[in-house]
Image 1 (cartoon, rainbow, N blue to C red):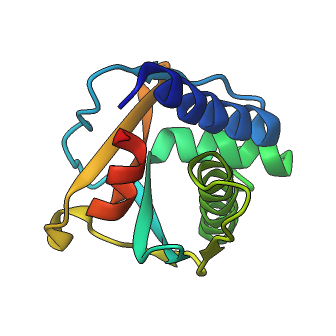
Image 2: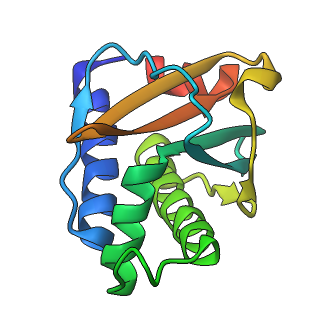
Length: 155
């Protein structure tokens, strides 16, 4: 991936998270996601146009709780699973939209589907390009899944 495109995509994700939750993320170079500990939340959003691919968002539970509490103005005791899932969907939708604006020329329309929760990224077996971020000891992984989407990024 070109350094300029990588920088634009990473900056877009960092800005979405900061704008919604006032949390500053840092990129972890290398794109290797941490091992699945079962303490993550995941959601996938399909790209319907201009190609059929998908984005996957994986967030470590502690970071998801912090983001959700900041967005809703709640403390950890008030936090519900529904709050977290709504936040996960909102983050994914916003990040995917920003990525598609960067990856798709203005003359081509893009279309995203609706987020789907609880996706296991290890089942798909499809090629993925991972962008990994952290905040303190917690992490977030945004994965671009599918050869066409990865091809756009690697141009």
